[in-house]
Image (cartoon, rainbow, N blue to C red; front, side, top):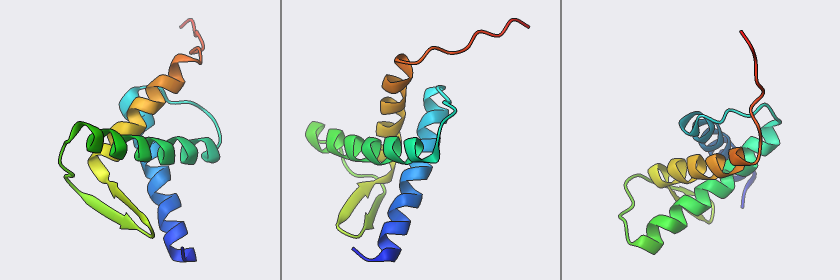
Length: 95
């Protein structure tokens, strides 16, 4: 995998992680590394889940040796962020 492919993969993972956090409504303050990790794992999970169920790939993006379906990657990242967000309490602010 080339350096350019790795940078594009990290950018795609970051975008999936951020959009997944926004879709799930569980915006967590944390590092960009956590967002990258959730985005990458969510992208793999969403693509795997769509293939397992037999859903078609809507928009496909090939990065290095990985092939991601963009729509399923975003939904996978949102689902993973929702699951991760269940383990964290939201702070209570009295306004």
